Length: 611
Ligand code: G6P
Image 1: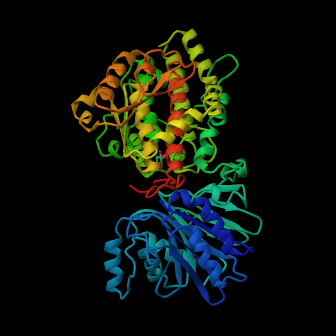
Image 2: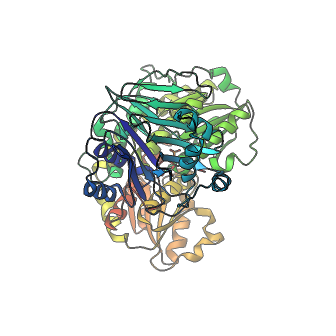
Image 3: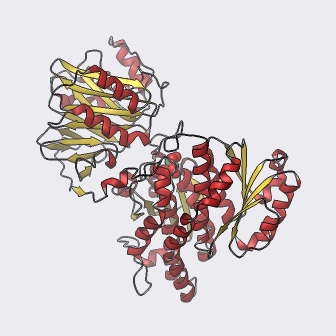
């Protein structure tokens, strides 16, 4: 994970780097540091803790007058505990080279031994320190680009690097492989960053550095070179996100802001693809309707909440397409010798488009000749770039580590895709497809209704925020939603929570239910409501307190549950999109009552670019 940033221009560099790092804190926040060019060489400030801690150190130091070139880093520790010394940037012992790194150097131990044999001494437990020393070792002929390329030949793993050379005070060198890096282009100034929000305040003109490309940034120009040293020209993308979309705008946390942005995000994702005559335009260029008719199975692969989208979608797609559909964790998929071929459609789901396991799963799918459609939020991210077809969720930047609006837009989009596929394969009567499309179009309004009245969720949260354990139960689609509801709660509130297929309770987990244990029963999947009622009675009989999530017209469940949350006017296709909303709110209000650091939960990072 980790976030990196770099600037070369004429503005004071330290406030700019600190501000940019704050925008990247979602990527990691256990330590932070900056390096900048001063008259007497490279100066480094770094510390364990947040950017706010680093800011205090930088403010107290007052050694940055007139400095206008620098790099910065916010860390999510992988190798070596969060500590001052393990923080980036790493400055070579010679003080000639400073490096910030996002990724993992897999062969760092081997390289370390090699460099130690040449007299190099290491002071950190990180894999990254080896990069600054290795570049220093390779810096023999006074050519920084040659040194970086020579060092790179020996690196195994993933890396986005920002590099300063004390001999070249007016430039930054950047390099990437399997970790994201964007270049921001300004007037008399240029930027590098792991993600767009870091520099959005300063420039909207960006491009992504390609795999193994190296960029040399000076105030006047950005020169990009491929591995052969040839110049590469990238078209500049104009980012039209509202800059405030990456700010909290009056909300206490990004998470609650993003929950409230869902009606808009879902509408923006669906509307451009649904035409007046109710046709669906996916904008595919390579996969044809004939190709979709030739598909005999679907695999959805992703990580975290994006995987949970896949589990919900699996039920939906199976029901309407009547072909085998599986959802598999990307970290398992790629090592499980998947049975896929050109008749398999692999659907990749990723908010960031940079999750390493998901990216590798995508490559595995392509290597087997599968057809690949990705559902991605970040435009031109690695997964988007490498996919055969991309469906973008137009959710805007998502900052809170715990995803909300990306989840719901992914789900809405995969459902729309399912309807498209059902139509070309003649699997559903046209009237049913049209009514489902219309139902999807009404989702933003339905979600808004739920958001207009959050009091009952707040009240229930106030009764249970001190609980130790929570069990979410459901069947079929409700179980799929339970997975996400449980993850949301545990990741931001640190309350132990688990999701169980309700039918499995009796095979072990029910032994954990005792007086007062909180069970959240999802009861919106109509075909199995009776079964859920039995499961609720079973846990009630053992003393559980039950919050049931029910359909508006359900008159039975309320008579046995302790609390109910009603989901208004749902159809099969809209019910998951609506039901997740009060569950996100429940997690948020519980965490807020507990005083947790909601947007940056401990040990987590938003973009997981390591295996
Ligand atoms: C992290 C985030 C989750 C996200 C998962 C996959 O764990 O905290 O919110 O679901 O990564 O990320 P992706 O960017 O691939 O959707």
